[in-house]
Amino acid sequence: MKKGELLELEISKYAFEGKGIARIDLENNKPFSVEDTQEKKNFVIFVNGSYPGDKVIAKIIKVKSSYAEAKIENILSPSPERIIAECKHFGICGGCKQQDLNYLTQLKYKQEQVKDIFDRLGGFENYEMLTVVPSKKQFFYRNKLEFSFADKKWLTNLDMERIIPDNNFALGFHVPRIFNKVLDIESCHLQSEESNQILNFTREFFKTRNSTIYSTYTHSGYLRNLVVKQSRTTNDLMVNLVTSEENDDLIEEYTKSIIKRIPEITTVVNNISTKKAAIALGDYEKIFFGNGFIYDSIGKYKFRISPNSFFQTNTLQAENLYQTTLDFTELAGSEIVYDLYSGSGTISIFISDNCKKVFAFEMIDSSIADAQENSKLNNTKNVQFISADLNKSFLGIAKEKELPKPDTIIIDPPRTGMNPATVNDVIELNPKRIVYVSCNPTTQVRDLKLFESAGYKLLKIKPVDMFPHTYHIENVALMEK
Image (cartoon, rainbow, N blue to C red; front, side, top):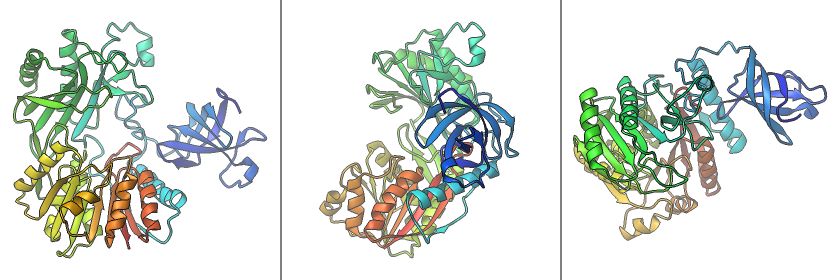
């Protein structure tokens, strides 16, 4: 088998990260059925963008000793689960990799993938796996979208056939594995129509003013990111423009123009970032319209969201995620709870009526400020927010403040999972129960194995689909000593 070779394949299984699996008879260079179990023929090919039931012509793009990777050249016979994708950018934009797959089938594969990670990678046994929770909305469910500016536009096949006068100005999403080019997005089906209007207006405004775009190669240029945040339970709508330096005159002109065009906007913020890395997080911010925040609700609780603070991107589904977390804690009202990576205090406040005291640990100062404001908004008296670098040990801070030891610890880290020092802190604190919320089951399993080695047993897990049409899945796990 060689790179560039074309093969006719039948897709039999689905792998994590949106790749179909085919197996091939290396002796005859033919696909074979999943029932064939001869070890010498068990060579796996991962075919990006394919689904079980597809028969395809695929082009080999990478060959390893035990597997190969391929991309679809032609679909000979589509899977019965395939549907027509709604978005015209589908297949190029890296966001919705499963938009052409029936939603119930998406859920089935996500459930299977989580179980496979826990069984095969984690080696866990004798635990209960609850049914995945579907999202109420499959489109326009996000409350936040982050767009990137680039001075190199990703050209589609259609673009190649025509003259494009402005290849040096793009605003949209990075194409997978391409970091210096951006696909110009006209509309996205994950957020509201107002968000699409903001996107297109912003592109044209700065393009007509010949504004420069920040380059991670030269570390020069002005425009970096456009972030749109929108409440699902109020009318709040935030525009956050991330730039490499201040230009008050230009931002004031932009603010007046965009509010006139899109009056639904309630606040405009300029984040100024001097960082070399391509992240949409400013060193400081300036407010040009409104109060610099939006407000949203999860269940009966109201939350203030600042430009840089974390908030679950699917507001409606977040209630199901937090209710699952609360159910797993089995709180009776007298417990001490630690909430690690507490963000703007959403989980801490959501569970506060069900326990004695919550100590919430967070690294980002603006998130703590939001959390304290959220506590006031909800008249929460039994939550204390504590600044701690959770990439290091937080136990020293807990001891310094003479905090009581926790009965339960809730953990909701970023995709990279927990720092080993933080894992060791949790083990030393020796809570009876650990509830681990994760958007990356692979790193979740890695951390849970460390807890298992310290005497904790996995009792149950429950996936919650926060991100329809993507291969991402949130998962809640319960461990007890």
